[in-house]
Image 1: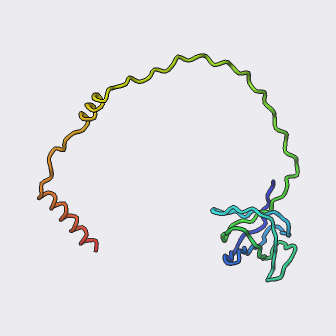
Image 2: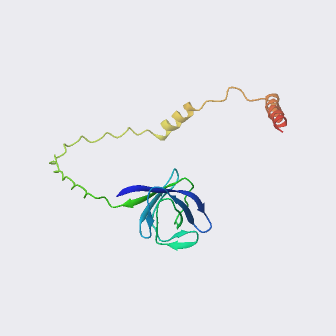
Image 3: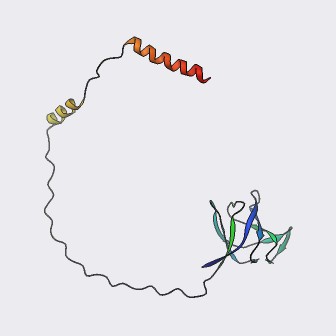
Length: 156
């Protein structure tokens, strides 16, 4: 599908779900398919209703400001594109011939890892654990707490 820029959204009425569109480069009619696109918006729908100053119209041309009911939220400065079917038919897809399958060579069975006994595993885990170098004394713990209290006082 080809798309042609028609205008831009200049306001969105959230309670009623209506986009106010300023038509700059083309026209819109009921039944047209439009795409509203922006940095965070991508809405594609058909035009069900168009209004100019609370009066329902079937078509609107360039230079007019229209209100259009939209399904999703759109934002100001989103572009409005009119989607049109492409003039030239799509080229036929080239079919590829499937390559001949080779029979896979037999692989040698994978070796299983050597099992270790529970005692050996327990011994390994004991070796990995290390004891703390020195237990913190009461004085060092109170200093650490005192430092955190001071920082709290400063932040208030």
